[in-house]
Length: 307
Image: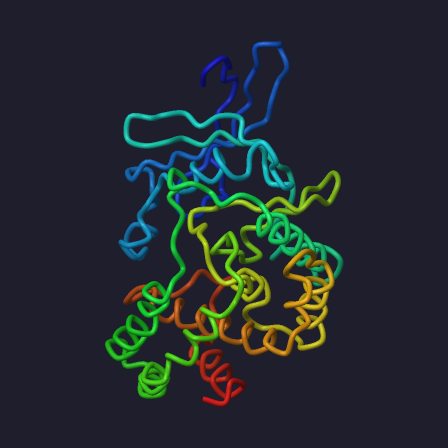
């Protein structure tokens, strides 16, 4: 790394799509830093991620662009980007190593409410801020993007012989109603994968640190909230996180958060996520933290939306 001496390098067990290494490095001023290196070159993608990730999501430079042009220097509480090294096959992110635990490993309660408030604060600021330029390479969460997932879900559940394949096909035929609810929402910078596994709570100050911005883009405001509260929840606990988010929204988003359109908009985002996991890949199951009856979620959302 430019201007630093690497003292120790170890493979991290917390890799997701790409291999991670934890580093101890000495800076120019003699200080010792704890860092994380994430090689975003195609060859460093883990075998399972390469096998199942849809090709249209394969843009390794996106996360580097988000750190370069959006998160730093403001950071918003995310890990500090120390450097983006240009490797031979792609960028290498060098980030502050935040010691802590993923939100998914923590009991429901204050950290989850804080994550909801963090998301609202981030979106409020970014909604009023400048639009990221094309150099960031953000995903576009538009009608074309959303139409992909029910199509994939129908095909994959059919090929799998899924018990709910016919029901998912029926949902697909009336999916324009869902797309309309997604389109009608305010558009903000979304993380795109705001699941509890990608939210680290630091052990020293309980700071919310959001990582893995590989699917960042411009999209419906409630997409990330739906991801945060997806899966198996007791209604009262889920409602508490949603309410913490709604109360923390400010600016031009504040009035919309308490509008009657909020509930169906959030339900449409939940349906999208369910269709996304159903349509991710053939012969694949989500890792345990995302393993859930997503067909049942989609059908329940349809019922709530009167479809």
